[in-house]
Amino acid sequence: MIKSSAFVAACMLSAQLCAAQNPPAPAKQSPAIDCTWLTVDTTAKTATFQLTSGLTQLNGGLNFNGFNDGKLTLTVPTSWTVVLRFTNKDANLPHSAEVVDTTKPMPAGPVDPPAIPRAMTTRLMQGHGAGESDSVRFVATKPGSYLIFCAVPGHGLAGMWIRFKVSPTEKRPTLTTTAS
Image 1 (cartoon, rainbow, N blue to C red):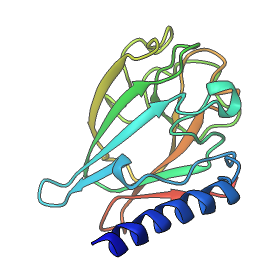
Image 2: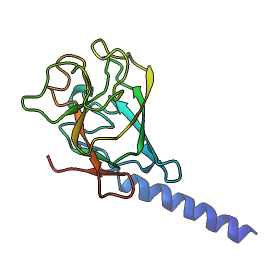
Image 3: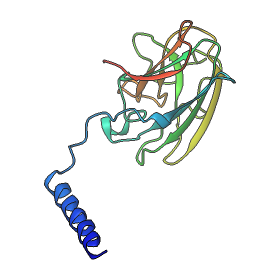
C-alpha cells in the first residue's frame, strides 16, 4: 500500500509539473463549435439551436456563439421546425436575432417582415439585455440562404451575423464553420 500511495503521489506531482511546463494555448479569434449548441429530433423533424449573443469578447461582443461575419453556418432540411433558444451573454450591449435575406447592402436594423415568418426574437430594435433570453420557433419552409442577424441598429452592419441555410437536399441539420 505504501508503494502504491507513493506512486500515485509521484504521478500527481509529475502531472502538476507537466501542466506548469505546458501553459494553455492562447485563445483563438473564434471558438470551436460546441456540439451541445445543436440538438436534433429526427422523429419530430426539429432542430434546436442555442443561439448566444456576446458569448465572447470577439468583435466587442458583437457575435453569435463567438462567431461573426458569417463564419458559422446552421443548415436545416426544408420543412423542419427550428427552435432558436436565444440568450444574451453580453454584459455591455443588448442584442436580438432575426432571419433575413442575404441582401446587399446589409440592413442597418430590423427587417419587416423577417425572411421566414416568425423567425425573430421579440424587441428587435431595442434588443434583450444581459442575461435575458427568448425562444423562437418557426418552420423552415423556403429553401435558400439567409442570415441570422442582430437587428439592434448597427450591430448587423458591424458583423453580428451568422449564416442560415434551408436545404431541400440535406437530411439532417448541421452546424459548420464557414470561410469568410
